[in-house]
Length: 246
Image 1 (cartoon, one colour):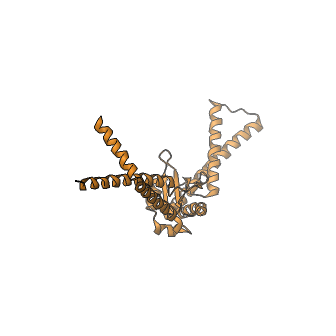
Image 2 (tube, one colour; image 1 turned 90 degrees about the horizontal axis):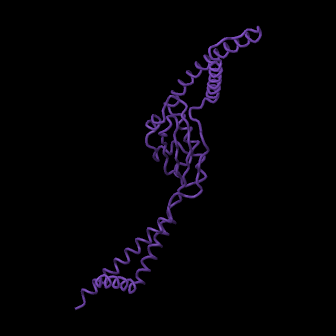
Image 3 (cartoon, rainbow, N blue to C red; image 1 turned 180 degrees about the vertical axis):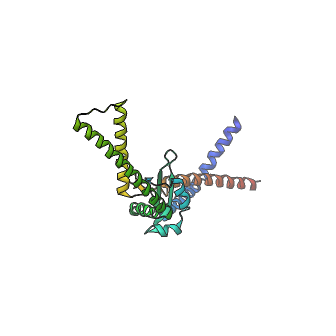
């Protein structure tokens, strides 16, 4: 117990004797942290969700797209030097959705960067070919549904005009099937009219607060390292002094 008290008192004694040195080292650490934060440009992040409306799955699109580096940035973006990172990530729970994340030094370029990236993705040969094939299939389905709709409308019109009754096992099944066809027809009409292989699901979520540099973390780390380093050097110097004493 006595040894513990002595060591603890010795610790505070060294700190008290070297308090100026410790404060100087910590001030230097905070100054270096401030210089780092001042010289490091702010990085802003934006996120947006999209749906792939083609036979190409999000994972296939990511594989073909490959790694997005500065070389590809120059092909995609009008201001490539401000773009620092781009990731296209498929959703695990959805087979047709992707999340796009873009990090840039210029906050004002983020909305345009999303549009430029989507244009690049739509013009990829894989997407163009897949969309043409999907559009042909949509046209075939659309024509078939239109034909079925005309038949149903004709039967219902003839029954109403002649006063005849249509007997079915379960009228609710017919009604539900009719509504299902209407919904599918509406969806195919939208896809046919839009001719868009990538659909935007939400507006870009852009943070006005920079994600880097993390100034609070940098200053906290600088303070902790400065305090540890200064105390370590103080004890080392005290140890050297004690060894030299007879």
